[in-house]
Image 1: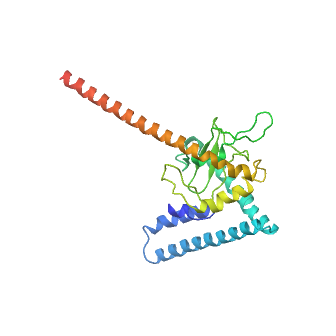
Image 2: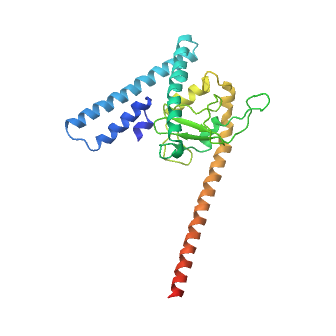
Image 3: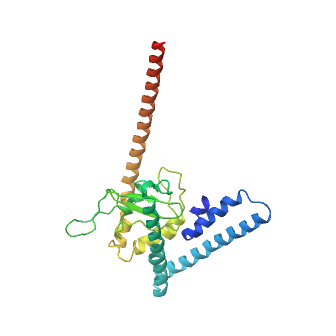
Length: 250
């Protein structure tokens, strides 16, 4: 699975890499050499794309119009293509998202997908709406509102991750600093889509919501742990009572 977290690749390329990694465990002889070569090709492709995207982002920051155009193409157009692909995949597996490979993220991981709007002016507010965020190992990311509806509003939409993020309190998806370089950095600069109503300042200032979200995650984890202990105690008590009744009956 590490191969899926460490490569800026298209979903089908990530799927291919995962299959190659699995096949490598049982290959023999020449077949192993072929698999190693294909894996190497995909890793080299990853590196070349990172270098290309870096150049565009840095050039754009320096005021190069052509570099900005290329960076926005990758961030807006290419990312949206795979975002829509991910949305379709989620809807096809909505009845059982877990089996579809999606994993729900913590409050900390969804801070930038919880902006509220003023119901009258539609202005973006500095509050919190209870959306859910799910991520797939191939990079698909979806945001679901409290009614279970897929969020497609540019304000809070989930967008494809070239690198999946880390998850607070969860080691199932290992964090990768490249997520900050190729997903977070472009988001801070350009927003989710060309129609994102937030400003760069709003997106950067949203960080102040992280610490409260961490506190909420700690509270949620404590509740779950306490609940598990209580449930376990109840189960043991029921088993003891059952054994006691059986003993009396005998």
